[in-house]
Image (cartoon, rainbow, N blue to C red; front, top):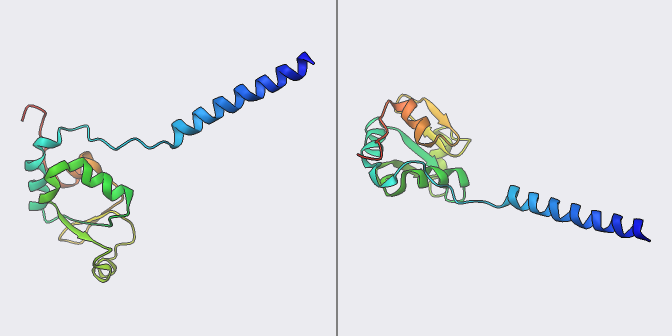
Length: 130
């Protein structure tokens, strides 16, 4: 009898551990920028001055992450909502969201983040004190 109780107890503990691990793995935490989004205006303006355009969709979580990384400074980014203009996105060859396209046709596909966009554009990321 005690062996059965030990097995049942072990299975219960195992089930709890698995449940906790699955919860930790699949629970989504809100994406937060490691930068102070209050001072990214100059960075976003620099990205925009390079002619870079982001093609995305409201339902795309990676697109939402890109937008959140900029905070309010995203208002300076040239953005095309592919849900509203699918023909333009198709004409531009957008097959992955988000896609960033330079005026010369170069593309950055997938989530780039502030660091990736800084590397691609040469735009400096403001420090916290700026």
